Image 1 (tube, helix red, strand yellow):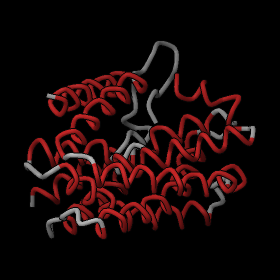
Image 2: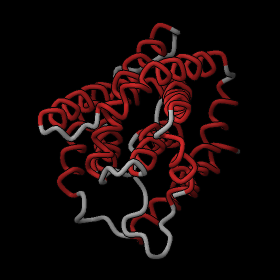
Image 3: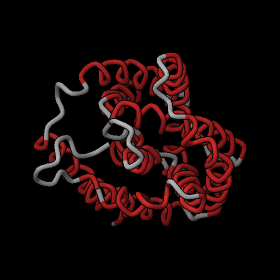
Length: 121
Length: 126
């Protein structure tokens, strides 16, 4: 039940475009005592079905600018493989700390400033 | 948006696409999240509106997430069965959130949200 609620809450945030995994992962580690790597795995798995449906819907409505991302896809895959390898070999405590620093950095970058409407993505 | 403006010139060049791809991928693989928060502002610098930038970022991140998920599972990270419940919640919540998008978006809500992120980040750092 708590997993469902965690997913529900992060889903709302993600649908509103404010992040998603950045909510679900701390929720799982800080409130439900899930180990960092497990929480990251759960996050990826939890979003795949919803993301796949969303991509299909967006593609149908021609909202995806494929020409912008196609040339970067191979590099994205290389980057993901490198990040994945780092995450798997990193000591859990270090990974959790890195994630914490990453969260703080994102929060600062997303902080709404003055005239700009909306703010985060 | 800082991250965005740095990428602005770059994303239209070839080197920029390499950088954009590597960075988004690295974050996706290492932190299993947050790729969208980097990709969306970067894509907005290319003239996409919020909705198209979000859709495009999702199209880019979905294959990376599938790859990362497979890697985590094969790499031996544990995942309690609860992930199915989390997935159900995320799907329902995602629909609700997309519907609420725009209605609940304002600077103060974002600031509260960012403050919670900082709090969580600090607790994870310690």
